[in-house]
Amino acid sequence: MAQQQDEARRQFDDFVRTETDALIKSAYLLTGDRHHAEDLVQSALARSVVRWHKISDPAAYVRRALYTQFVSWWRRRRIRVVETLTAEVPELQAPAGPELELSIMMRQALDRLTPRQRAVLVLRYYEDHSEAETAARLGCRVGTVKDR
Image (tube, rainbow, N blue to C red):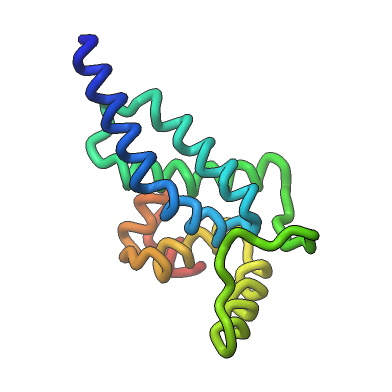
């Protein structure tokens, strides 16, 4: 039993090391804020580590936890996630030229969406999942994904 727990712990640690950056990028697209994104990823990982030894597809499980946690936060707190000006330079490297304009337009468009709509777009077009996969990860019907 102790060996299984050690192996599960090692697998979890490896997963965190290799997937955290990608998870934060997805969470940032959802929240629009680096710190909220990091909190969201941490929360999803904390929920997942408890069941890690039972999870057959860790990447799918953690991503679903990420999206459902985001929608749950929004529902409970009715948080309006917006960009704020700070004195600090963002840690993410900003694009230049026409890519910067596109990045700004995309951020503004995402900010106008509900959290659930944003989650659908991030899953479908940023992470390139099918409608069925997106519905499964969000725990809704395919028709709901198509409506969003």
